[in-house]
Amino acid sequence: MQIFHHVSSVRAAIRQARSEGKGVGFVPTMGNLHAAHLALVEIAKQHCDIVIASIFVNRLQFGLNEDWDRYPRTLQQDSAKLEAISCDFLFCPDEAEIYPNGMDAQTRVIVPSMASVLCGASRPGHFEGVTTVVTKLFNIVQPDVAVFGVKDYQQLAIIRRMVEDLCIPVEIIAGDIVREADGLAMSSRNGFITAEERPRANQLQATLCWIEGQILAGERDFVQLELEAKRQIENAGFRPDYVSVCNSKTLEPAAHDDLSITLLGAMYTKAARLIDNVSLQLGAPSN
Ligand code: PAF
Image (cartoon, rainbow, N blue to C red; front, side, top):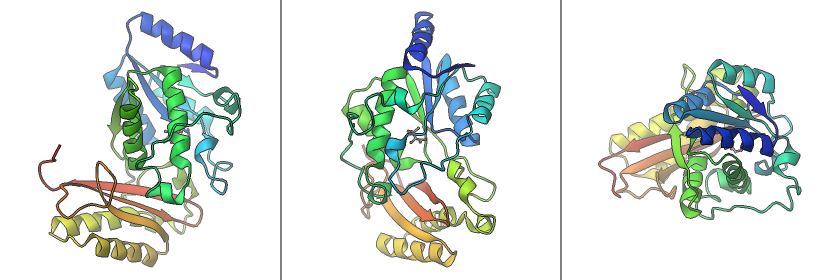
């Protein structure tokens, strides 16, 4: 695996691969790689001749009181994991390479729909930071295909919308959520869960599955389901951020006759904010 720290050198390598007729797949990450990230690389490999992963802990998408400074940075282990699954290129720039004019002066990409609800409501500016850096990374790598995890459902929906709105020539592919044996969605932030909390940390997923069961059984009082879901999370000793029954495409509160529904939730443990989602299809999707 070739490792690049600079935009110019990664571009030169990609240009060379393209001149050999190779299709390029891209997996952007913030590192601290686990099985779910590696699964995204495997998906990219199925679609393209060469795969490039990036590792960049993007300060622009963290709020002032969030965990940017303690976000796990494990570059050596990460690059060994990527090497072991034959990822072709790793791009790991530093902040000055991505934001040479500073972050305040950085031109921003904003997706006005969907960015201020759910996670966006409790993390103002977060999705603006994501869409800005992803646009930059897309412009640097110019991939044919980019793979993102469904665990970050809202991020995926916003990136799809951004690509559509800005006519960015990249195909976005989604990688399924990868879960621990007890259902907890894999996340780089799971390392912040304390040993005492860990046996209960799958509560968010358990609650979303409970809502799914209720809806499949015919319940349509979504507001009541959301209230009860928050109670379940509180009873397990966590602080719910939100639990929301949404239209899978728009992320607006689901209507009673919506057929594609996604249940999204976020909760705080002592030192982490965890997110999860479950999608359900109640009939043939309408276009
Ligand atoms: O999902 C992530 O790890 C990040 O939000 C991303 C897409 C790499 C942008 O920094």
